Amino acid sequence: MTKTTSSIGQNIRLTLLLSCLCQHAFADGSNIGKVYDPYVNQLEKEFEYRTLYEDGIGLQETSLHSYRFGYGQAISDNMAAEIYLLGEHESGSPISVDGYEAEIKWQITQQGEYSNDWGALFEIEREEGGIWEAKSSLIALHEWPNWIATGNLSLIYEWGDSVKDEWETAFSGQLRYRYKQSFEPAIEVYQAQNIQGIGPVLTGLLRIGQINKLNWEAGAIVGLKSDTPDLTIKINLEYEFY
Amino acid sequence: MTRLFGIMVLTTFFTCMPVLADTPEFTLTIKDHLFYPSELRVPANQKVRLLIINEDPTPEEFESYELNREKVILGGRRTVIFVGPLRTGEYSFFGEFNMSTAQGILIAE
Image (cartoon, rainbow over all chains, first blue to last red; front, side, top):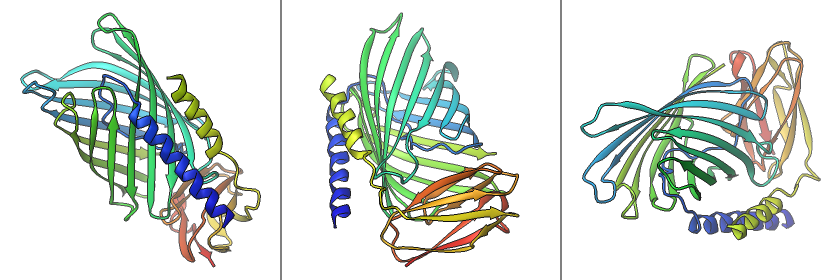
């Protein structure tokens, strides 16, 4: 009974924290894309492809396709590194590669060791126009028998020739139902200064051969603020191998 | 902003407080690409600590969708995996690198 009460108390604290942070998140760039889990699996390598289709951005009658192609691998039993090429395709314009990014993920606690699992993510990105962004994120995950809640809270510093140097914060979260390995429905929320979105996401894992896997994720995030795209379609594919 | 990160630090501290003082430990050994024992009984409704010893010279990955765990153990090394609290029932696991032989069941009772 004591442990149950303690666990409920810790869950309430985590929920209050994430709710509080969600209300206080400020960032003017879009953080819609991926909600990171805190885990690193030793020896694992991956190719990653992400695409976002944003329709109806603010008052503009335009759409934007953005792409991200990455390669990552574990560098120890609790650290992984990944590099990305970033590209964009605005309606009526050709595809362009206009940025790159590097990230390090640190698994802070063992999975299941405490009532929540914790990790951290450190990213640095250079975009077109000499815009730099450094981002540190705290990753929290809570596991129930059939549900998993994950939150990413980010502190961002943006600088460059064409932007105002500033600190920002952002939050993204996911609540996922573990239906079966190849198919798990989820709901995701995103909050930043000009971004407020929510929507359904489907995700799953497919085995390719004995030890290779394809993680897939597809979702539709509906904008809740005028500056947020009315609809963002996201597709993430991760090919994991050893 | 200062208040925000104050809340973060405090919450991280409180939610990371160990709850493991009474966590029972069970040992699984990997040898010749097999799990020993292949059937492991653990208490239900309680977190347990699995010590996994890989006696093979090659790495193995302990994986179980039912237990929501996936972890690589290098050859000749050992690791710890926390599972539960589990409802009463059977939870299959396997070694992903030698799936045809490395199979086991965790029975929570």
